[in-house]
Each structure stands twice: as C-alpha cells, then as structure tokens.
Length: 363
Image (cartoon, rainbow, N blue to C red):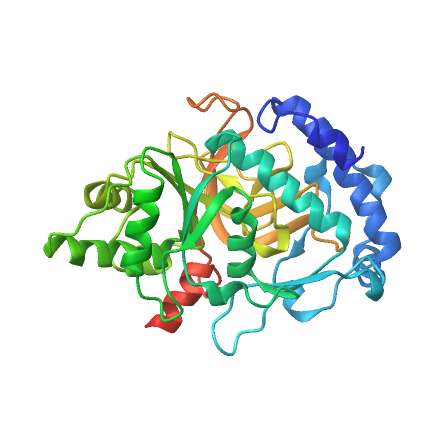
C-alpha cells in the first residue's frame, strides 16, 4: 500500500477493523523496506529471530526504543539523498536524536500534518501569530524539534508574525498592530506550552494590570511540547484553558502530542479534550512488566506507529511516556480511531519535550 493511497482516505474515517487492516499492510511493507535498506535495523531483527511473514497484526511488529536514535545512525537512504536532518529537543549535555529525511519522506510529513490539522481548523489559511522568536528557524539544514514545529505549522498562516523578539520578550506594538489589521478574522496562534504560559500569558496578565488588553476571542490556539514545568507550578490542563480565556478570550484551544522521530503524525486534541490517533498512525499502550498490550483505561508505556517514515526505520517506536487509551471509535466528537491521554514521562526518563527542555534552561 502506497502512502498516497492512505492520503486519499479522510484522516478519522476508519473504524478499528478497517484501520487495523490498513496499518498491518503498510507497516509490514515498511518493515521489509527498512530491513533491506538499513543494515543496523536488519541486524536488530535478526537478533530476535523476527519473521515478518508470521505476523497477523501491526501490533506484533518489533518496536525500537526511541532513545536508540540518540545512540545510532539509523537511515534507509544513501548519504547523498539526505535533504534534512531533524534533531530532538534536549537540555545541555543531553544527546539528541538525529532523524534523516529525503525529499519524499519530508514532503509526506508535511502533507500528513496538513490533512490532520485541517480537520480541526478548516482548510482556509489564517493570519497567524507564532508565540516564539524568529531566531529558532534560522538554520534550515539542521532543524530542532522546536524549529520544525514552527515551520511545520507556519504553512497554515496566510500572513505571520512572531509575538516574541529574540530576547523572548512580547512585542506589544507588533501584536497590537497585527490584531488591528486583521480585526474580524479568525486568527491562528501556535506555540509551545511553557513558552505560551511564561512569555505570553504572564505578560498579558501584567499588561492587563496597566489597562492594556487584547481580544483573541476569534483565535484558535494549537500548542504542544510538554507539560512537566507547568504541572510542577500547579497549572493543570483546565487551568491553562481558563486563564487564557480570562486574559484574552481564547476558547478554541488544542493541545497536540508528537515527536521529532515521527514528525507529521501528530495527535491532536479534540473539542472533548481527548488526543486522537488518525489513520496515519496509532498508539499502543504496553505493560512495562512484559510489553503486552494494556487494556483500555490501563496505564502503560506508549508505543507509536507511523505510516510515513521511508528514509529511516522510525515506523514503530517505544516512547518514554506513560499514557492510557480512553476508548476506540466512540469519542463524542465523532472522530473514529483511538483516543487517549498522556500521564507524563516515565520515572527517570530524560526531559524531552520542547516546552520542558526550554523550561529547564529557563530555570
């Protein structure tokens, strides 16, 4: 099954049985492809005696620990075909994952994200406020997860401004002018969770005390990158939403879960507050004691699979996050597929999300 065939299907239209069939076919093909093209991956499969012909479901395919991309060069393309190298977030001294992309995989990542996000924002491009600084995206050849997130979501903006300057200070004048120019239009805002809280919300709160307010009631905010720092400050998901609505009228807010090792296949939060797996990817919860599949409502380690990666063997990965499946095909929002929640990082796992690594440096 080609990726273009998967792209032709609406992202949240397949039920569990239909999606299982699609994922098993596509992910089995990717496993065979990477076994032929990546010697290191082939050796790993050989070491466990894996037989691709014996599997009946994508859930039986081997998974790589996501940390492996920090320790090994894993790619399924010649060096000369690499057009972009993505790096994960990391605090000072941490090793970072390196993900090698060719033109096809890079293009498919972008196409996938467009299909997913448009299910929540509509297809029209909007005036866009990026709650970050311009410096993050300067190096186009070596993308950090933060820069990749900004550039990826920038395609949804018709005209864009950065809300923060390179010193991470709110550019009040630019924000005011932008909102006046686009008054009455739906505005897209994008940023990473902790930065939104620290440099946007807190500054709007300070300005309100001086009598300066901003109306973003027509806005839609997409944010991601980790909650660890905010939870330590006793700021919950619901509190985050409430405070932003109180300070600037923002009500249409969507968190998302994603990682640089599977860029494109993001898991968006619906109107009911649930993260959703699209047709392009899936989440499996594994019991830490034996890696068997956990039941609905049972906490375990998150495994993620993606139909995109052709340039590197990142189609089946075991993360360092804990979570639980809340249900399948029956979310009140009407979208098919699994919906789930993230409970946090595994104990003793490195700080990893864009927000969390930035918050660690900020501290």
